[in-house]
Image (cartoon, rainbow, N blue to C red; front, side, top):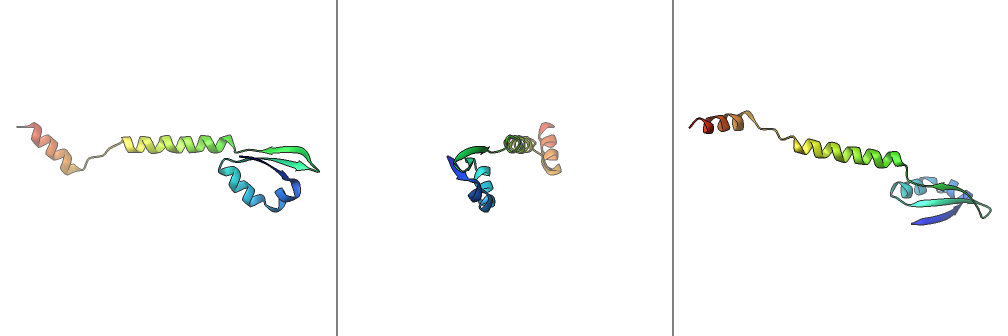
Length: 79
């Protein structure tokens, strides 16, 4: 969702606006009706989320077996 917001409202509601931008919304900040800035989510945030997702997948792919399980597998292969 894209929304225009006046500079005064942007100043007084900055924490709320930043939370909404973090959630993916975009804003155009105006001064006396004239667009002066676009506020969009940071690309760095998207890269960090992607990196974290990849790290989580890699952690899940690394399965570990206890010593008991390994010994059981060794023993079963010796029959």
